[in-house]
Image (cartoon, rainbow, N blue to C red; front, side, top):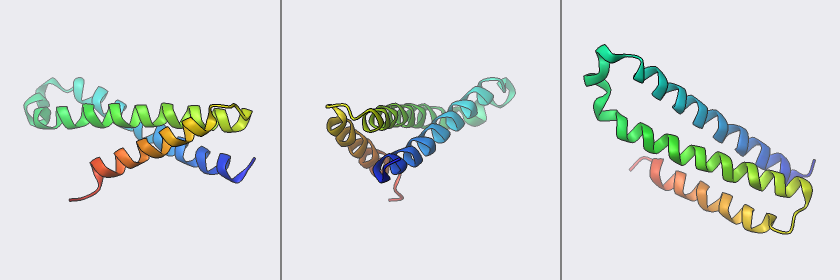
Length: 95
């Protein structure tokens, strides 16, 4: 495995872990009707985080696949991965 592929694998694994953890958190909150009012203010932020990190995981997986198979479009996928990383940092870096 090449160094870039290893880095992409680490990034992909982290993004998948974040996306699945956030998605499962949302599912658990949906099954707590007694606490619905308590978690209502967090619902929009949680859905946004699920969408951002699911997209990040999908783009990173495509980039990893392109790197492993040496596809012609892998440079565009790497650029998209970098752009999604920048979006995630921009959205979630403490202000």
